[in-house]
Length: 95
Image (cartoon, rainbow, N blue to C red; front, side, top):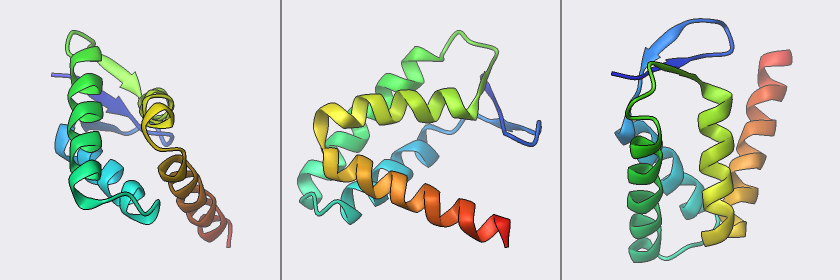
């Protein structure tokens, strides 16, 4: 099973469901229809899962980069929503 290495160095079990939820939320914020966002989330989460299936561990930043790369081809508005969420989250941590 693939382990995700977080920025802090902690390891977390790879979760296809967690990736799918994150993509769905970004697509929802990007004003993508429910049918389309479910399709996009399924396709990308399955592709990411397959890409790292034989990998022992991978950095969270690499998983994120690949998700956004694939999402860019499906919905640029969803990518912008994801990036906006990232900025807000980073700013909260700095306080």
